[in-house]
Image (cartoon, rainbow, N blue to C red; front, side):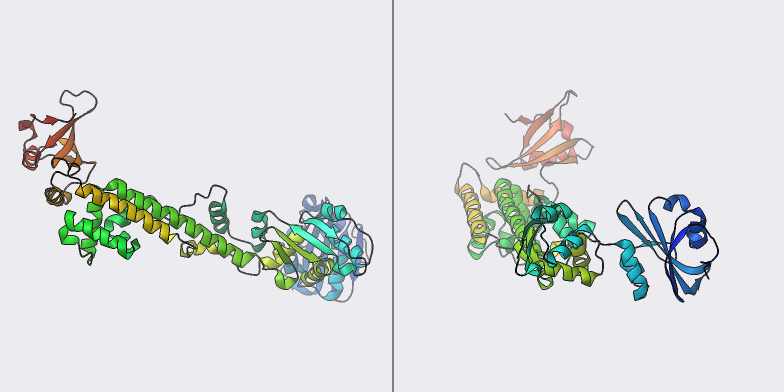
Amino acid sequence: MPDTKNFHGMKNILLDNEDWMVVDPLDYDAFVYYAPEKFKGSWNQFREGDTYFVIDKNNQSNNGLVTYTIHKEDGKIEYYNAYGAARPKMDVLVEFPDEVKSVVDDIIGVGEIYKLLTKIAKGEQVSSRELENADDAIYDFKYTPKAPFKSKIDLRFDEDDYIKLFNPSDDDMWYYNAITGNYNTYEWEDDYQATEDFKEGYFFNQFNEENLKKVKEIISIISPQSVELETDDQKSEAGKKLMDMFRNEVESMIYEYTSLTNESKTRGFNQTIKDDFCNPFYNYGIFTKHCLREYFTSVGMLLSLYDTMGDKTLTISELLFRIGSDMEITGWGDYIYEIDGVDFDQEYFDSECSRHLDKIIDKLEDESEYADIYGYGELFKRLDSKFKINSRYYTKNGKDFFYRGINPKNNRILIQVFKKDGSAGMEERSYSEEEFNNFLVSPELFEGFIRIN
């Protein structure tokens, strides 16, 4: 039991009954005598500012009576539990009976904004400037003389700071800033993945009925065996052939799809944020003026919230954080790719696809583009299983070359080889299918290549 009668250094005894003691040590001797075991050697840590020990006389720890610590310094207050661990205020105060809480309230005091709200509620004049200087969240105040409790207070936040009132995770905030940033560049769908999907045949599901008919008209010419587009193999073969033969048109359709999808999903994300965060404080008497930025309430409602939260030292943002962090409306970082798109411009997408598919059909009908489209399709089919455009390969005896595709105007196979004299650059060659097969077996016999100007 702490001894308050004998001298153990200078101290103020703020409460001393059968069950509890609250003591304010004023010098080293008093600090060491009343401090919990963990802090007896920490005088230098606590000597600046004011330190208070709250001692439970009826409960023992391993090293003496259970003792809680409160430290005030430079306007900040720290709370330590019976084990000497720093904890939030409410985690410590919940252990105290009312008579101890009353003493602690006197120790802690009240914040500047709470003082001003109390003055207004009593009918005292407080200017808007005083309130704005006392709390960064306040940007306007309208006094109501006949009912001071109903005096209106306008609140304003930066959108990032407002979202943080709900205790989002780091991932949540990363996605929020990436998606809602000024540059609007977040990619829900990227061109690379969409291109791979096209090659696998998944993209055909994006075409409307009219455009799908055009796709089948094209495939009936370049890949007749795939025209039904019923099996995965048929879709994949058709997708690859379209990509290789009409890359510009296909990439344009992919670009339109990814752009519209990204815009749509960004709208969907923004709508989700607005649905969840525009009005979350409505039931607490704080109403929306401008979503995520401007709100209004009354002096009476704020005082009621301070009483409910039990901490009159908080700023308004800290008060709202106490409420918002318990709402559990964040966590979008965990389901970000489940966000639904909003207002995908299907009409525009269908129109653009129709235009690019018409270009392909015009090319197929233009004899100057394809000397023999059927021959081209068959040659493509034979080569596609072994050679991919712009890829590097080796002949039977190890000579390397780049496969560049098929010239549609004469159905000759295009390749590039390193110059024979070892100089920089590549030589372009054009082979018939028979010549190409011979080149693969014995390239040294086929140096009489055809140069492409």
